[in-house]
Structures are given as structure tokens and as C-alpha cells.
Amino acid sequence: MPIGRRDTAVKMLWIGVWLVFFTDPVHDLLHQPRATGTAVWAWTGTAAFLVGYLMLVFRYTARPLAGAAGRLTLVGLFVLAVLLVGTLGESWLVLFVYVCVSIGATMPIGPANVLIPAAAAVMAGLALVVRANPGFGLIGSALLAGFAMTGVRRLVRTTVELRQARATVAQLAANEERLRLARDLHDLLGHSLSLITLKSELAGRMLPARVDDARQQVAEIEQVSRQALVDVREAVSGYRRPSLAGELAGAKSALGAAGIAADLPAQPPSRDLAPEREGVLAWVLREAVTNVVRHSGARRCTVTFAVRQTLDGPFLELRVADDGEGPSGAYYGNGLTGITERLTAAGGALETGSVFTARGRRGTGFLLTARVPLGSAP
Image (cartoon, rainbow, N blue to C red; front, side, top):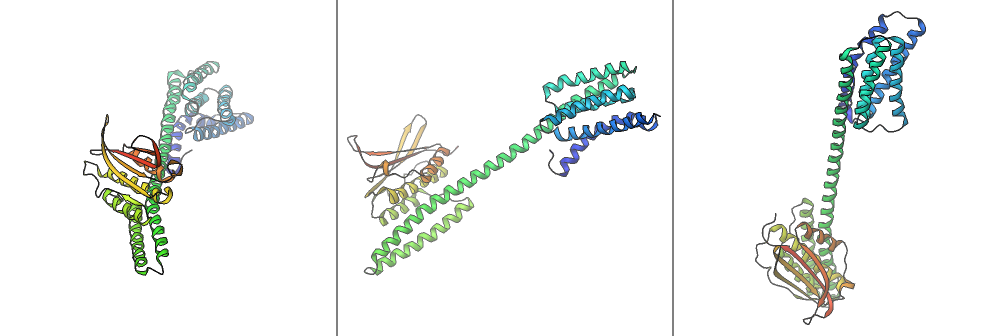
């Protein structure tokens, strides 16, 4: 079905173009003297034919001919055309042009290529019955009109499919942006709120004996809250891109507040790492440290960087290991799912598992390994 007044007007124009062939039947109706019964039949049959033609072509040009009503209407047009030509004469042979147009506008391409010539052949046979000479002009017009409508119908169907595809792409883009925003907010707020919670508990334990230390913790809570607000605003605007240096500093603060000994490099390695991939690795570090603080029950956490040469080129590897409860205690939820998606989009990969001792034996703790390609992003 058309969408909007403009589409309706354009469609009616394409359908109405073929009404130019209706001049002969109209002239015959107005000027040919007939008996009352025959005149009533002529007017009634013509009106029924026109209504059926307009409804059929307007409704089914842009969609498949489904249901019995549409097929019966098409058959009814053919039967009316045969009866009107047989009872009223050669002026009504032009009705088969509309039959061919209806077939081309509503039937699938394969059946239409067969039925249009068949309808033209029936018209030629009726012309012999009523002793008329339609000539090649009228037969050619019927064939041309029918096959032209098959092309118009194909064009209309393609336009409808393109609109549907465009709407689908827009919906997918909206869903992707919604997923990006949800992932960013989770990564931002999960880390910041965990840190605020830890510092709040620590300040509560310090009171009332250590007021100055509690005041320091409250000041840091305010600083973290303000930074979280800035981060959320930047994430909503789409400009947030964390750095490894900043996340290392944040990880040291979070681990220290949780009472977990932190073994962290002072600075990330100075390698040829694209800013987009550094941002992804920074998100991974933030989520990994947040999980260690919230879920591992660890007493020590180690963060290391290394460059690995693979068949696909050099990769920068981030390893976050703790001595906590191990994989069974790891929280593989929205956070790890989100960073897995980020790494995959950046051409990297994520691995998780147990920590192994120097002799290769499985130890306690949880190990997260993330890799991103070095060099410029594609």
C-alpha cells in the first residue's frame, strides 16, 4: 500500500494513464441506441469492470496477490470483458487492455509472462467471433500495457523493499548506539560506584577514631564522583576515550582502597598503538580491576604488558592476574561481555582462565589476558 498522499497520487497517476483506452466504450455507451435491458447491462457491467480494475491494481501493485478475493476479482474482470465484448461488440475489445494491465500489475512475473499473451490471444479470438478487425495495434497495445505494468510493479516492489531495508538499517544503527551507550555507562559507573562504595566503607570504619583519615576518604569520594559525572557526560556525547596511563592510576587507587596489594607498571609501554585500540585496552583494564575489587576476594593483583609477535603481526598483550577465588568466583557478566565485543571490533581477543605457577601447575586466582594489534587502526 502507498505511504502518504504523494505516493497515493503517484500510484493513481500510473493506474489512470491506462484509462485513455476507455474512450471507445464510453463513446459507445453515450451514442449507441440500445434496448433498456441491454443499456442497463452495459452501464452496470462497465461500472463493475472499472471498480474491480481500480481496486485490484491499486491494492496489489506493491504486494503479492494474496487471498481468494484478489484472484476472484482478476477472474471476474476477465469474465466481464468476455461477456461485454460478446454482447456489445467490437468497441469493448479494449477491455482486454485493462485485463492485461491487471495481470501485469498483480501477478508474479513468471505467470504474468504467460497470462498476458493468453489474454491477448482470447481478445483476438473474440474479435473473430464478433467479426471485428482489432489489427495489430490493439493487440500490441494490450501486450505492451501488460508487460509495461510488470516493469512498473517490479519497480514499485523494489522501492518498497529499499524503504524497508533503510528502516531496518536505521533501527540497527539505533540499537548499536544504544548498546554502545549501555556498555560505556556500565564500564564507567561500575568502576566509579565500586570505588565510592569502598571508600565510603573505609571512611565509616575510620570514624570516630581517625577523623582526619576519614575526611581524606570523603574528599576522594567527592573527587571520584565529580570525575564519574564528567565521564558520563563525555560517554553520552560519544567523545569518551580513556587512556592506559589514566586507568593505571585509577586501578592503583581502587586496589589500594580495597586493601589489595597492587603490582602495576608506572606507565604503559610506549608502543605504536592506535588511540582507538589504546582506548579499548584501557576499558579492559578498568573492567578487570573492577572485577578483582568486587568479586575476586583477592589479596594481590598484578598487571603486566608485553608485546607478542604472531603470524598476524605484533600484538600488545595486557595481563591482569589475582590470587582470589579463581574462575569459579569470576563474574562473567555484562562487563566481560562488553569488553569482549570491544576487543573483537578492534581486531583483538580476550582470554580468561586460572593462574598457573612457575612449574605449570594450576594455582589459585584468575587471569585475564587481552590482546590488540599494534600499529595504526584500519
